[in-house]
Image 1: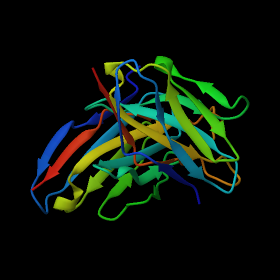
Image 2: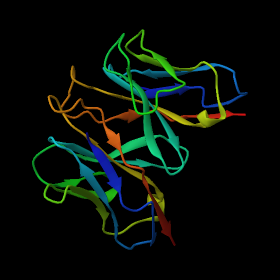
Image 3: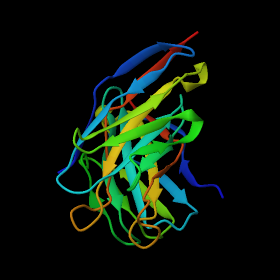
Length: 117
Length: 116
């Protein structure tokens, strides 16, 4: 099992450019999440999904969009990148309600380091 | 609403000394509690979790944590640290339905720095 994978690992954008980050998991998890990690701020939830075809806003959703067309994939889009979106982005997944919901520990990907100039 | 406070942003300690990383939470419903570790340039991985039952939870790499409901705390401890324990540690809380949604809230992290 690969677990949770993220593509790409690194990216540099210019202000105003767009890009999509891809997250894939092979554990048949229902829940998937996108976080950003900034120094001193910990992990902040951007968007999450509780199942295929569903998405919801987290703590810091502005400037981002997401899609969950397939259960195993969760895409994070930046339509017009801004320097404030320079960060490390982590994807995570968990079983959620349909599986072993009493555990619900999260499994994290290795991260994408994004710089917006 | 649930929240997590990690009381120390940085904890320096010498190798083979004991360490305690503090975590307090607030929630109006029952909780699940987690500690995750993040080594440099990596994602987070689970150290240990409290779901129910015994309040003393043992995790990987010799870490343990104690759930204290009256003090709403879940402090992480290790009796003797190694250089390899140098990492960022995150405390997280989630709540099951119907009071919660399983979506966890993370603390801001504590950087454990182990000196030789």
